[in-house]
Length: 408
Picture 1 (cartoon, rainbow, N blue to C red):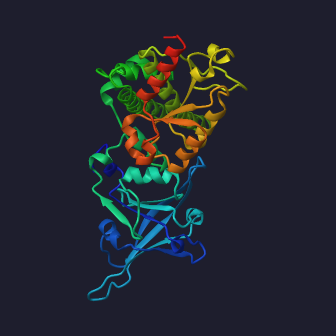
Picture 2 (picture 1 turned 90 degrees about the horizontal axis):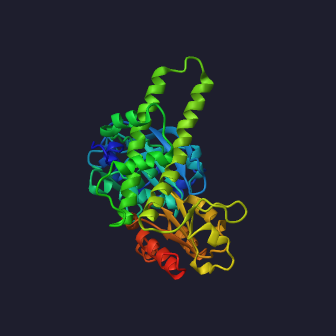
Picture 3 (picture 1 turned 120 degrees about the vertical axis):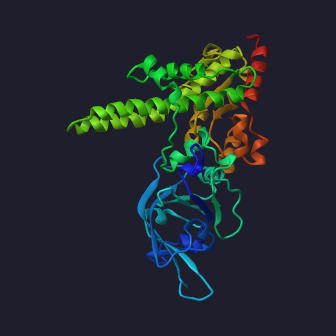
């Protein structure tokens, strides 16, 4: 097990596409996965039936909360007493998760360090299935059996911001600390969380030699990853201090505190990303307004060159630009489509890896251009990469329009 790599959370991974028989919830109350001989690399050879405590999870691109269930997997050799042959089988029970599954969904079986198992079923051809394949280092799955990986400590298994987002969708809390700065944060912020803007500024201040004018894409990734690890370090400290004080019998206070921690995690990263994008725009002397009303109370994340020019009907609409900023897209990218009626060709910047071709094709049809830092573009297909632009490309588009408008 190596800290900062997938091996910290998984001893081995098996992945395949579900067949119709495996996904049929009515065949029996006990179901068998097919093509399991390769699983001996993960579960080993056993005597008798071995049960593994298992968490099952079903994911798609539309529901914010996954379907989950607790149960077990049973691993055994059906020909244990045969002198020369073995025939391993892996059974799973009927659960709410198995009831959701369909043929051609993605199946992942992960053995955890405590010898429990995580079974993930992701809707076929979805963004989350594409992201899971990328996370665990699997390309297209063409053969019917399991593809296996162990020793998850190669460079591709190193956990970065994009992989953290995916792991947390799988219910895995990624542990990361930067204790070098903990004392400084306690001295600076005391026993409170600063505003997101304050914390973004602080995170940038801890990185020397990161210059957006040299490489805007690299700067954005460096800043957001540094803020993420500093936030988790400081959060762990503050939450630990609060838990040590205790809640006596005040259940409502405990629930309220727990919800505040969860809500802060959900909302903070989006604002942090906007803060760092804004810092890049300032470095390039780009004119913009942030979160100003266009129509019907809509507030695009960024309007270029200004909200005043946007509402000026004499200003050429072809020189206007709109940028939505979303740490992850899911279906939220569709919100951007109605946020600035005068701008027909809109842009959205995200840090989400491996969005499905179905979704990017729909974005393209809706005239929504995806902006993605260069380091994440390798998670997309070659066909998608021909269309995606990076942050530097976007800056050049805006600068050209503002030059034509005589604004810079």
